[in-house]
Image 1 (spheres, one colour):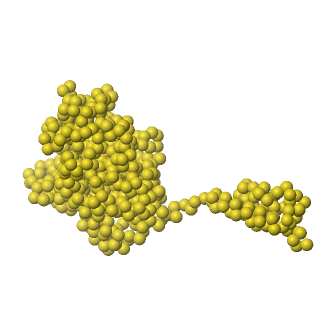
Image 2: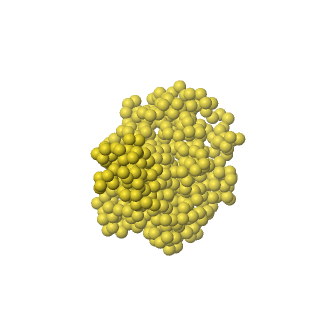
Image 3: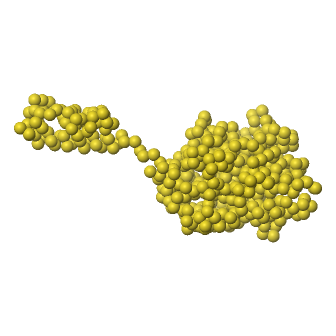
Length: 554
């Protein structure tokens, strides 16, 4: 009788009523995947299928539905709270292909077809060769004529090395837009002050940071947040915003043609013969015609490239400015990541190498020669004021509590790492000598410095719950073959721009992994915002990733 009872139960009743509680999600899934159909063989109508055969079919159906249940079960949400400390290290001026174009498995130079490598002249024709320009925009006799394609800087026929101080291509807002040329990336040589040198790259395999990238996650689809140089991209790191300078004088504004490009002089040569000549020289046009500050402009507070006024407050830049640097930027009021962190009571700090020395140097009387700011004389640290984005904001003016609480010296970073006192969010800017910026420092010194910081963080007491992001600020004018994302939710008037290296380092980072998710500088802000439940900043791009694809937080 017992066997007969089992044999005469309908399969649907057996699975839905006996194995699974009715009205549950799993019961609904079981019914949806039609396990009963897998068992309701016509031969079983009236209970005529042999019991052993029925049980075998029943077991097979249960296995099938269990697999379907597993497949339909929603993934566990990433637990961002497992990360308690976020550290951002921000070196300088290198594109992805320039440093990581030979990285195994990454989207590097080997993936760049001819249409992404061949450089064009101003008239659209393909250049027959590449030439490197000297400071006067003429052929540099130190460099041979080169084929129109990427070349190794550290191999013949160029044969330079990463421990040398080398050329720095112009890296400015309007130049960068024209170089990218709608994603074709074929105007880098023509719109560069160094011509074809912009196509040079290194074999980075001997770099210490390359080894960190091999151990953890290398992001090979990470773009600088804004077109241009360090100044604007530091602003994008903290506020995803472009500074406003509505009253900038005409001398600071870019002169554009009818297409919105830098207006070229009538005698501007072909890119085969010399460097481009525009009416907007020097810093590349600091301010747009409608009053946004896009190229290097000095902070209103010391340390600034503009000394104090004679007889004026020593902690302020002279409001009259200088002929070369223009006027200082008016104090800004845009909302920053510092504001949103402070609003939630989250601890944070911007640590800058040489900050205290630069403060002392900046508050000298204007008649005294500076020894730290924008100088390499006597092996100086070469502090760069335009790399200090919070120093442009009224909230962090001299004498404010926020300045004292959040703007700190690089030596304090080292002490705080060792003591386990790092705040929840850390930004670290290496001083000029160690930031890898061409023209005033080399690659090797900065590589060693940043690797030392990483080693120290890994030995520190906060490592087990830490995320470290090493992201370059911008491309330094160097070519890269991948077009930046564009379109609604991906880009806007200000960016994103050329692809740059970024390494995601953490006990939670995927190991020996290449993450090809589309990111830009604002992705760092997005991750911080999600992790701490902050009010989002308006300029963070909706469709860019939040770095979570590089992490295992489940």
